[in-house]
Image (cartoon, rainbow, N blue to C red; front, side):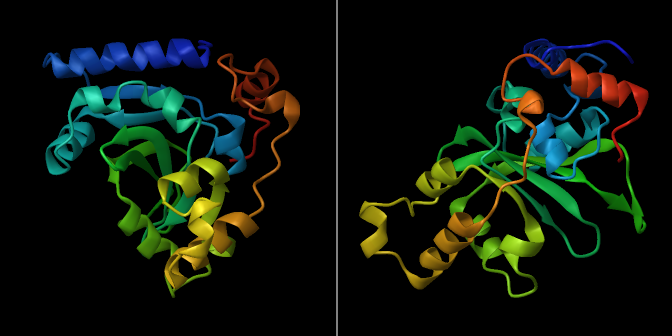
Length: 219
């Protein structure tokens, strides 16, 4: 499909599909649009992000989520708190959004490979609430250097507030673990996103989409 959607249109379309899904209509997949240059800079390929109705149904049930808790997901995944790679057998890109669910934040996982082969489709493998403790444990993994090997993007200010390690009141009373995590976040260098492509605007960037349609964006 060469149909161009702005991020707002993509978001409206997803919400409409979500309403159909909630009403029990026969819908096979829900669409979250082409990833923004921010997600592309994190290594997400240039094809449309989608989730099958089956995966969505399974994960809403598994994680006790409601459809209303994942409204506006396309806008949310393009303005993330953090993006990182995770998984030993098969890697996924984990995108933590700013959508709150109590203390948790709504998070999605995009499969990156299957059977050792890199996938060019962006299928969501999971949608769930991510809690602070779980993320901190992952960031403190001994299997890799999280800041160097796993982390792809972090909104430093928002991440540190959510994780409860934001200065100034945090600085004096951080545990060793919290200090390690604060260091990972503060020392991380976010990817360079070309100004004309920085898609934190509601309007999709035409230069970028032209390149996607011509197939210039390497996946």
